[in-house]
Each structure stands twice: as structure tokens, then as C-alpha cells.
Amino acid sequence: MTSSTLQRPTSLGGCATLACLWEATAAKPGNVHRGADFEDMTFVDFLASAAVIGPVMDRCEQLGLGGTVLQAVEATRRTVGRNTNLGTLLLIAPLAMARGDVEKASAIVRDASQEDAGQIYQAIRTAQPGGLGEVERGDVAGEPDLSLFEAMQLAADRDLVARQYAGGFAEVADAVEHLDNHLVYNAALNDAIVLTQLLLLSRHGDSLVARKLGPAASQDIASRAASVLAAYQQNRDEYYRAVADFDFWLRADGHRRNPGTTADLLAAVLFVMLVQDRLSWPVTFYGSPPT
Image (cartoon, one colour):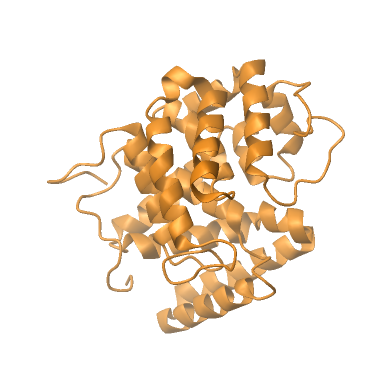
């Protein structure tokens, strides 16, 4: 889409903050948003996290890949005391250094130094994400014995963020086009984000859920998301009921089915669209249901 009267934020940090704000605000099934907190994590936590990472992303070229991720994780930890955005930061940092170009971001990951890898391992330990477990090689509990790219290759089959590092950000690029297509047909940004989330879930499940509950739970999410998307093509009233039911199911059982990795990808998708100026301004976040 082409820009009109108003323009996007001009800095990388501004784009990163706004992308994270939009991702957190969208009423995505199973995630925290402005109408739904978790017991241990709130919408305000995500707003604060979005605010503090902007200045770090503005210095990404000076800090390098590992330094950017580590400093952004540390700023988040100081501010909210919990992990709200590790996956998001891992994705946005190379994309910021590449100014939204996924091919350049992939090259940055491939060329990452051992210092970058060590800083990212430290960032992961600082963030303390759930469900990591232990692996034979590339375990973040110690110092890296592989290049960052090699470590991400080993993790790519079990983590969708690692798959972006290993696979050229292919799923991010695909989701950018999907979200853009919905906006072309005048969907409000909230609706387009939810539809893109459902597409990602239907294709990949969610690797955070898979780590916590096992592959079958992730596949269950994928099947249910595909059913919700099918309803969108048939009857919009039924679609919105299906979204509500899906959201209720994801939040049951102490929100252990929270599709957090997919939320990370969506933040990266929004960041790319902002940096590439692929939004018409002013952006309509909420609006009439898409037709």
C-alpha cells in the first residue's frame, strides 16, 4: 500500500515500538491484549516493554546483533521484571539492522560473530523463557560452541523464531504479504492482524505451546485455527463466533496454550511493514468488520 498525507515513524526505534504496541493491542485469540490480561502478565507490561526497546533499536548498527538483543532484553527485564518479548527482539534486531530487508537480515544472521552468539545466549538466559529444556548441542545454558546460524539451524525444527534465522525469515516475509493483502481490501489493522495470526497458527501451530505441552497440542491449535479461517470464507457472523470460541479455548487451562511465538512473528511482520512504508496513514486500527 502507498502512504498518503501522514508518514510512518522515521526511526527504527519508533517503528519497533509502534509494531510492538500494535501487536499487543490487537485482540488476538489466546494472547494478552487491552481487553485480556493473564494472571502473571498484563497489557501494561507489553506497553512498557514496547516503550523501552525503541532507544536500543535506534542504536542497533552500533551495538551489533547480539548487543542489540541483549540490551533490549535487559531494558525489558529492568522495566517489567519478566519475559514479554524475547522472541520479538530476536526477530526485530536483525530486521532493524537490515532496515526491513529479509535477505539482508538473513545475511546478518549468517555473518554473526561468536561475540554475537554469546550475547544472544546471555540474553536468552536473562529473559528466562519457558519450556526450553536441554539439548545436546547449542544449549543456551552454556557458552556457544557453534556459530549463531548453526545453533539456530539445530533449533529450527522446534522453534519458529529459530526457523526464521535458519530459513531466511521466510514465514515473516510470507505473513507480510498476507497482512498487506487484507489491508488492501480495507480491513482494519486489528482484523488483518487477527487473520494473519490465524493463518500462521493454521500452518505452523505454535512452537511455544509445543515446547510447553508437546507437538500434539500445537497441532490441535493448527487444526482449530484452520477451522476458524474456513468460517471466515463462509459466514462472517459465524467467523466472529468461532474466533471467540477459539480465544476461550486457548485461555483455558491457565493460558498454557498461549500462542506466544506467533505473536513474536506478528510483531516482526508489523515492523517490516512500518520500515518499508507499506501502510496508508492515518492507520485505521479498529473499524467496521471486513467485507
